[in-house]
Image (cartoon, rainbow, N blue to C red; front, side, top):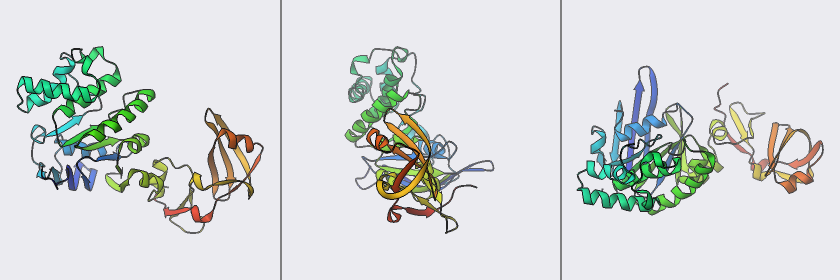
Length: 328
């Protein structure tokens, strides 16, 4: 890989299955040392993009370049990628060490060299002491780490992760999100992460590309993209609660950032529609002129906001106006 070449370049990638256009004209880049999350709902085409990069699907149009090398027509084993599947795909009859050494061996490394690369990868994911165990003797989180170590052991310039945490419970997902971010920071490889989980994308990725119906509809730095969605659909998909049709401009929507809402004296008096308490405070929904406005209150705010009415101000300058591309 030349110094200037991105770890991955996609140029006009398209793929149809019969009459269904799964991916349409997708162009993306992942730089060395960067993590890009391809984020979207089920069926949006993100896994087809990943499978096309991996060589498991042949695109109808476009190019796939890895480290500046055109691999569009090459089989998976010739693309020099590290791939982590959703189901881990570990060999049940092989030890942890042999599972991780499998990739280097397939790429021509001697048995001692492959074992050394495998041990280095296991050390990175904190599983050195488990090298003699079988996959069935490991927890789900440990199996996920083995699958990641197997990808790392190939020393590929590009890692592909397909919903890597989806089979784990929430506690493990939270722990591994933290661990993976630290691990990715140690690697020089580019990482393409496919996920439907907004928290996973925000926690792990430098940049996020949101997909809808086969197309990338917004791309940018992770924190910026979550803070400023480009459309109403993107906002709702990213978890924005307060998305309202513009009362005066057809085809436009207004987004209300919760951080901009000011509680207390001097604000407009609004009727409380519902309250829902939780360990972290209270969620309250109010009858606002734009529509039902939902706020998350801290315990202190909730204590100060008891009753059937609540005063608040929504500064007009804080509202975000975006195209309303929601169906219906």
